[in-house]
Every structure is written in C-alpha cells, then in structure tokens.
Length: 113
Length: 112
Image (cartoon, rainbow over all chains, first blue to last red):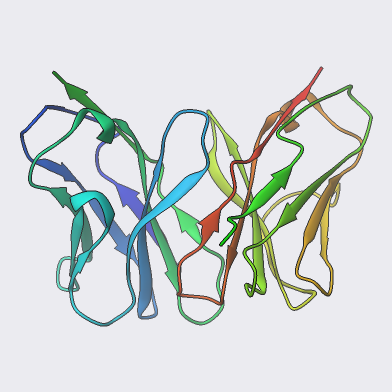
C-alpha cells in the first residue's frame, strides 16, 4: 500500500530563516514524489518533482527537496523564507504502476516578519 | 501557454440537485484528474481520465461520475447533491503519470 505522511501540520519561521517541511512516504513501487503549494483561494502549484533521477531536486522559488530512500523521506527545504512563502504545502506520492495519487494532509507554513 | 481552466469558479446548489463541472486541460495533456478538497478530509482523489477512458477511481459513491472528451476536456457530475458535497473541486492535467500535474483554480461548490 502507498501512503504519505507530512510530519507537521503547522510550521512557523521568521523571514530570512531556513524552512524545513517534512514528508515521509511508503510505496511498494519506485515512487514519483512531488511537492505542491497552495495559496489561499488558489489551486495547487507544482514546486518540484522527483522521478528517479537526481536525489536532490531543485524547484521553483528557491525550494529544493532531497529523496532519501533509506529513510523513505522527501523533505522540502528553502535556505531563506520570504513572506510570500506563507501557504499550505502538500507532499504527494504517485507510485509507478498506475495507482491513484495520494496527497499528504498538508503543512501550513507561517512566516513572521 | 494557457493553464488548466475550470468553470464555473463558484457554484451554489440545493440539496438533491445535480451539478456538472468542467475542466479544460493544458494543450497536449491527455490525463485529467479530479480531486475534492474539504477542511476535514483534505485532498481526496476522485478519478483520472486518460484518452477518454477512466483509468483510476477513488472511493466515492456512484453519485460522482465523470467523462473525458476527444479534445481531453473533462466534466464531472455529481447527482443528488448532499450538504457534505460542499467542497473545492480541483482538476489537474498532466502529460502522463509521473510527470507532475498542473492544477486549475478549482470550482467552489456550496450545497445549501
């Protein structure tokens, strides 16, 4: 069975400090992993994706994520938070083999001035 | 190029009615998926269409149905609406599995 767990429902950081949003996954297959961001009253925007190429994936807006198979993790990081990063972030696993996509419960990021 | 377009953006319906939502994917994308987003349940997969065929289906009752046309545009239909169907319905298009999906702004459905 496939699953994805976002370890924090809320994360609060100060502007200019690093961001870490944690995601663990479980998949019987070699998964495709994604991070999406959702700003209030908006749809989801793709930040980055991992599809079995380089384990360190760079995305838009300075975000990156590292795929660690031994830890079954795909944490999202950013060196320096900006006020515009305040949003909800979703970790998504889409295992190869045709199973349905699974979203994590989401992590709401707050950025303090 | 144009993104994923969902219409209408907002909808208010009465219990027992039915509703049809529309999604136009990014040009060239043949996969269209639908999701329901609610505060209590989060994002839940409804179904996925690829080249006019339903490829996957989530755990929703038969009142929820969908289809995809030859131009990849998709519609989803909910019959006999219930209050609990109030949600943001998101459509996503992609080239194929594993390539990442691009989402529309969603249709906010309110059932009263």
